[in-house]
Image 1 (cartoon, rainbow, N blue to C red):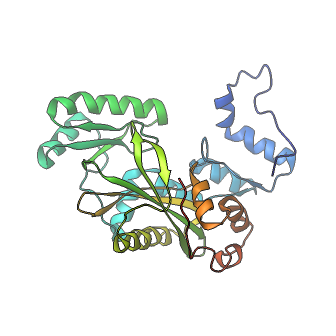
Image 2: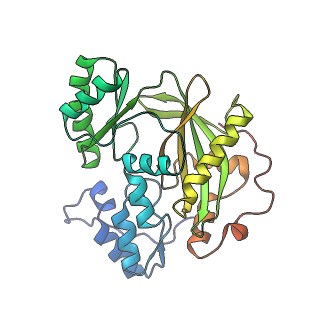
Length: 298
């Protein structure tokens, strides 16, 4: 379906850039109220993972089509999400908590050893990530990652994990209705990447052992249920060369690549999100049997 109305967020003379307009929470809320909108779907960029925006919607009587502000806040920090995963019993890569400075990063490296992956605690898309294989690499990599994270997300906090050589990257699509009911919609294999950004996605993953596949589904549902997850989300894992899986993060939003999941399941994820936001349960917005036989799409 196409929109039948458009609202200019940065009229001529406003001095607001196009990107700035999409991030202007008060202006977007004002536009929604002027249009008489009952709900806002944030898409998969800009404010889609912004807890303040979700809260602003709620505060103004507008339904945010996505997770609750609390859930977005919990999963917005990778270190907080890591703690939640540990509490839920999911395996995680050995790593640090948030690191305050370079000295703490050096101390962690001396304790754990190399290679290590430096990661920004906020954001995604490969920003603020560096592989460091020795101490000279750490001394340059950490400040570089902090600088990039600060420029990209407004937060330069980083943490470090043991670096896995040539892992598979598997993400599980989940859908919850906010009542504690969560289902998985199979997986997407996003192992083909360039500069830590996904290039090709395949669904379902080829050559993944059935036993491991079921463990991934179970763990994805486990962490989503722990937060009474609402709407669509993605739980991401790395698989090492011994087929051991490790939780890495939750994306509390619908992703660009959700369409290949729609192709293999026949489920319109955006429509399901809207129906759940309107009060529907999983039983009423997913047809019985629709997920039993996934196809193949890349």
